[in-house]
Image (cartoon, rainbow, N blue to C red; front, side, top):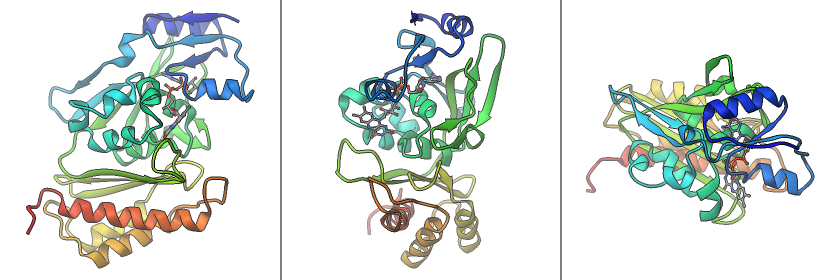
Length: 288
Ligand SMILES: Cc1cc2nc3c(=O)[nH]c(=O)nc-3n(C[C@H](O)[C@H](O)[C@H](O)COP(=O)(O)OP(=O)(O)OC[C@H]3O[C@@H](n4cnc5c(N)ncnc54)[C@H](O)[C@@H]3O)c2cc1C
């Protein structure tokens, strides 16, 4: 077994090229669980923890987009200044595991595992993120919707590193909420991200843990746009929010498993979507 402790992206890419089939490890909070439970065997490993290029972020000159390195830990996403640019991502990051897990776990690892319950993924979907992949010879950009293929399946090739994601910096409400069997240290049984693009006049919703991969509720989104003007300020009635939640829940395909039942998951999605839309409606309005 070869372990390469890469100190640059170039070194990591060369190591992947020289050791086909090597496993990448960033925080190890998914991979080492797999190893400990004998669900995977490691032959060669390329560790990314010391690759500083993967831990950087920057906002484009026109301030419209933000590029996040795949190795940035949740602990950084949940606090200032990143939390101001990407509030839903910060909320999702705060729900991940424990402080120890958040100090090590990353979006690159969440994307690499591609569990439908990964807390970062509904946020990336609702924000229509772009995933940047790089191999020794080439680089390519994929829409998050093309990247996530199914339960723990993604479009990454074995010789590629997920180097970063690009997200829009939007004006308007962003919210993330999840339910599980406890209030903390829990994998989602159902999760929702709602994003309001107040300038573009759209509401985008993504659901986690209720289908083989994250679901964008495009029919419900189109229905809502046909019912009310989605440019700021929103004027959403409680009845409209309830119907929107119901329609969004109709677009998922949950299953019964050890974490929950399909019917509870569908109910939870309807409630979370309704609540987040009402929060979006109240966002920025002074209390009466
Ligand atoms: C106690 C505990 C609680 C947890 N709670 C949550 C939770 O609440 N919500 C949640 O979403 N997750 C949770 N997780 C899972 C895990 O923390 C997250 O999925 C995290 O995002 C994984 O990131 P990582 O950097 O540790 O990934 P790693 O374990 O290092 O890697 C995970 C996978 O991604 C691949 N990979 C890593 N980086 C890259 C890259 N740059 N390019 C390509 N492939 C890459 C690896 O090869 C591996 O297949 C929990 C885990 C534990 C142990």
